[in-house]
Each structure stands twice: as structure tokens, then as C-alpha cells.
Amino acid sequence: MKKKRRYLTATMPDGYVKTIGPTSDGFTHYWRIVAILDNGKTEVFWGHTKSLAEARRLKTATQDAARMRGWASHVFDIAELVETPA
Image (cartoon, rainbow, N blue to C red; front, side, top):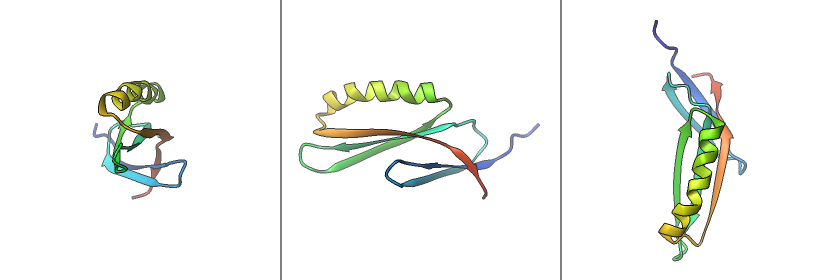
């Protein structure tokens, strides 16, 4: 049986909206890191996971990444993905 392809949308705390798809994967959460570099520039990293627990593990790993990459600061956000019409 073929899996249903759908669009998934996350709304971040700052109002940014991200839609992924069409996908048949079972993603449940979207995560985003906004990192401020020492030179004032910004880098953005993002992805999606199949559970909230998986996204939270990434948040913990972000602390190590911040130290290794020398970020001046960063924000890590997680938002639930909801199915939206195509």
C-alpha cells in the first residue's frame, strides 16, 4: 500500500512558518538553530525529526556545537509539524 504524501507546516515562536513536502515520512517536529557568529553574521540550521524526544536530543547536542564553532550566541527552537492542505 502506498503511503499518503502530505505537506507539513511548523510555526516557530517568532512567527516564521516553514512548510515541507510533499512527503510520506512520519515527521512530527521541526527544529531550527539561529547562531550568531563572533563577527556578527548569522547562520541558520534546520531539520525535522520523527519525535519530540529526538528533537530535544539535538538541542542538547547544540551546546557542544556552539562551543566547537565559537558561536557568540544561538537560539534553538522546536515546533510541532501539522498537516496542511497542498
